[in-house]
Length: 164
Image (cartoon, rainbow, N blue to C red):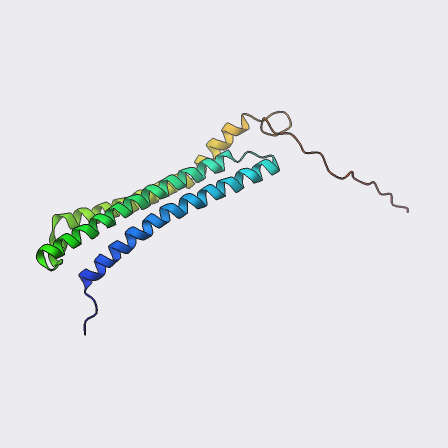
């Protein structure tokens, strides 16, 4: 009793990956927005500029979303292609010898290499030092970025004397 075929599993896999990729785009966008809001709030509380971190998060979000949108398109095209072949031939065995299969595999491989290369570039320390040097040029004489003021202590310090 055969419950599935290899071709059928590839079809299910492509449909599932397309769906998961679209869900990832939505979740990454929502999480990135929340994370940036928290980071800006912490920066305001601590009176520290968080723009370099926020910029890095935006770049990572855009890069991740581009990857998952590309992946969803590739998997949707594969799914449609497999269904089309199945309707015409009642099998999808010929798909794997077709030139479009090679194109699909190449596009999938290139999208994965591209995302890895972009993430490596974004996460390099050089990116952070460029942002830090830009911000350090805006520092006033109190070692604080321009526009930030010190928060006064809420409780006065009590002086204690020690008797010897």
